[in-house]
Image 1 (cartoon, rainbow, N blue to C red):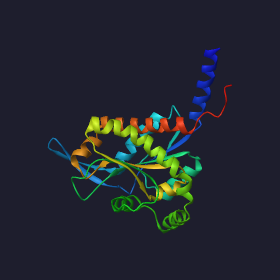
Image 2 (spheres, rainbow, N blue to C red):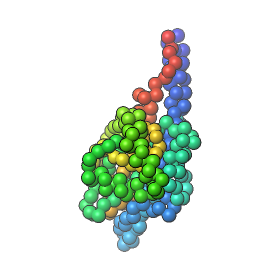
Image 3 (cartoon, helix red, strand yellow):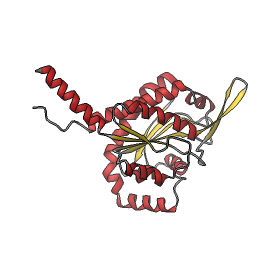
Length: 253
């Protein structure tokens, strides 16, 4: 009897997990290279583009999540995709969660560390600099949409609690791995007004893996080992969030 009940529970729970749809968004792409960086490998200087790093990591996250839920990418190849188009994909597939993957950059070569953002109002000048970079791909129409949404508090009020919880779940896994295995600094979880998160209109986070402008950090992020571990942490954080937020709705008793 106990085995039968356990089997029923596992079936219901796994079915519920698989019913969740997660959209993974590799930042930039096509004509939009994102940040650029260089690091030395022996005598060679290798150039790395943010759009390539984000796509590589996003594909790994998708592969890790696919056995547990419906996982999709906003782009699976190197192509230009506006912020509005990314949001349209979320609407088309009726995504429950939106994960946007980026890599940071700074005019200061010594800037370092990883951070996680969720959509909310703030008065942090440092965050505004990140917003300026990540919001560039939105035209006037997108800016008008986000302004209306923020002013009326529709998106923020509806998603902030879940988005913050999602950010905590993912970042909690990242900080277990990145500082210990790769000596990356934890810059924490921050609120931010990112167009792509607001336009997605659902619980969403934007991740900044590290700094392209820091050659030591860039070399680490370019390695398969880092990308594998980073993707594993993201996927685990998403799975943990789903288990808590999307509980089985069928009573066993």
